[in-house]
Image (cartoon, rainbow over all chains, first blue to last red; front, side):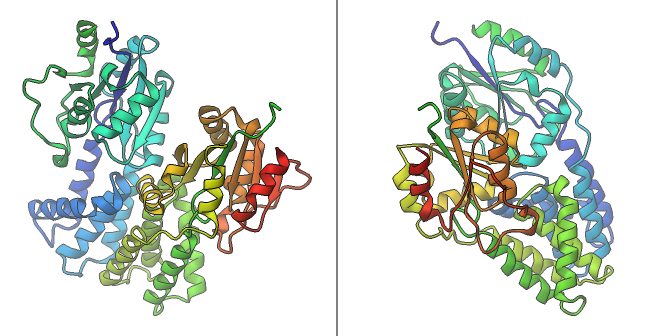
Length: 233
Length: 233
């Protein structure tokens, strides 16, 4: 049984705990702050453009998101945005960085059932500092054998992580809510990919589901993970 | 010889390559942008206060620094700073995130001499994404056995890293330009600490030199590291 799964990677944001909802809430505040200058739709379009453009400078995370909101506020107002509004955006960003951590349903029981039987690795991108805060606040830290906070999630990222903490990607599974970052590159690396959709997933994380891929699985919630793993063996 | 050193950790910013000089250059630009509103001294004082205050939200790095500059600009102008100035601050921050990497004198030859004989680990804090960029641009990546980008550098950080990549802190040495982050906590963890002062070191990294500490060394530049290691054995 050398092909049996020995190591399971879990994405964190919107897989273990709520995340995107805080971005959406902040986007609503942002739209309200700039309602005199731009429609919400137009504003969101411009914000997404700024986020895309800045990804190569800022990477993923709340600090880069805050900087992109400020940039967009200046743009859509043609430089007329009052400093007080920029101050409000700064406050909104800081609020996100201290939001409470809300674990998703059945996450803890599932991790507890797997811990000890498999090597569990949390694999997440975003701000290092913020992700560490959330892991600590989640109380899930002790259930993981390792934590990897990475700047991007590509096939080579998974090859490296599953070689480091497991028996290589062939005996590893990655579980997450992003087809683009969690599922597709893990399968490309030679591992299994389990897709757990979340109602809110950032549009830049959208790619089509893999077709005819024997190492791909989709489940409705993380509570359905155990039978999937048992069936693979 | 179980006490012989097997693993050497290197700080990155201002130990392997220039870093603080880019912050100082940006601070000068920042002072020029706000010259109509505040003296440079007063501005720097307020900026440092904002940085200290925000450390628990933002951690270390350029993105947090940019956000603190924006906050300070709003504060010192009592909300009168024009949006165009905020835009200039955003530009200055983005420029820092793409500054060229300038390796310090004799860094490469020293790492080449040690690589293979010792396990070499780069240990740095700051923005994950930015530190990875700088390591790639430095061309030094292949000389390290491991890279650890951490949110903070405490004694427990060094215990964990030197257990993971070496034979524990007793057989490890940490080399860096910050007494507070590199030298003192590595010694506290049970390892050796080598202080390589840099002309520019952030004021929040200043603490007194250890006194009467047998595992403490100070060198003028990283080129003086080899004889120190050879003398310890």
